[in-house]
Image (cartoon, rainbow, N blue to C red):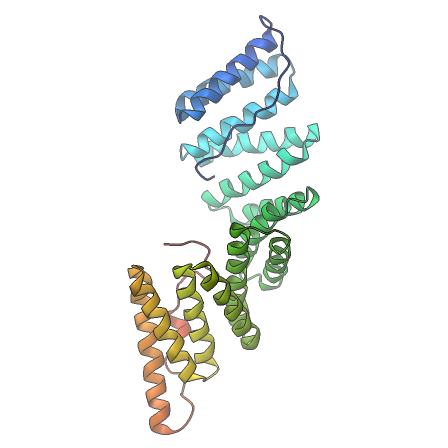
Length: 309
């Protein structure tokens, strides 16, 4: 669960000096502590309010308190502790029929599962959250969740389902006009390009990388530009288009070096040397290279990169 998760706020009608009123007062106190980032203090108060809500059978209060406890534990880095409360909150919001809270809770659960290395549960949560947000016509959130699910499928070599989710994400992002959505769409194009490369669909991979590169250049996003150039070089290398591969590998190296991405520059330098050697050998032999050295073998260890360094 990422930093910055907030506690649900709702207009609450409550009578003072009643058990239910005291429960809501306790919840509000916890929310104030949460906003001050006193997460241990907020957890203690939210747990007290959860007990009070249970005692008076206040279902909405139970759902909100459980969700708040999960958020506080998550923001405090205690993801395993957060998980049962997040699951309880999801079940409660489903029973209450609160569609927006259900979608948000599923996304939060996906993040928790990912933090705890529960990839399959995370994938299911993100995929279902994407469907929930589609129902709400929240296209950007739907795209974000579909992209997360797609990456998890791709890392597990479930390429068919990953491709479907990538395409779903791209379709959702295309319905939103915002800088963030356009960046996410370009990221999806780049990740889908890598998948097509792994599947040996080189023409599709080249077109997707080129489209992503154009989008990132328009946004002046240097790390992503370097990554797309690197991807193009890898595709062209495997297609024996060595002159183009050398140009793109060198451009990737220059982009990373000029923008201070040292780790990426080190990798790109190895890539460039490998492509350059293959080009020189091909020129000497006047024949296609033997593919003894593969740019792909030097690419980042995590396919479908979805995080900046």
